[in-house]
Length: 70
Image 1 (cartoon, helix red, strand yellow):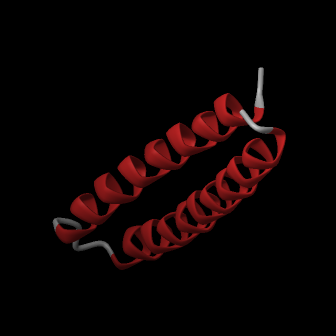
Image 2 (image 1 turned 180 degrees about the vertical axis):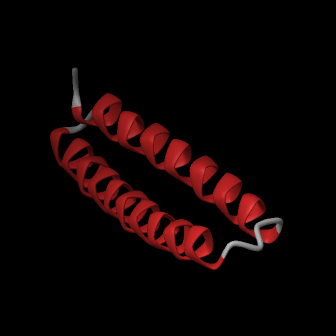
């Protein structure tokens, strides 16, 4: 596996995190339970951090691929 393939895998993972975020936000709209909303907010924040970390890592790997001439 080269840096470009590795970076693309991170971007795919980030996209999966983004899908989970969107689903949670949609579910949150229709929930009246305060505790459930707090839990959803917590999970949304966690997934956003993970998504952002995946994107940053992918960007770094793309730069490494560029240096390697991939």
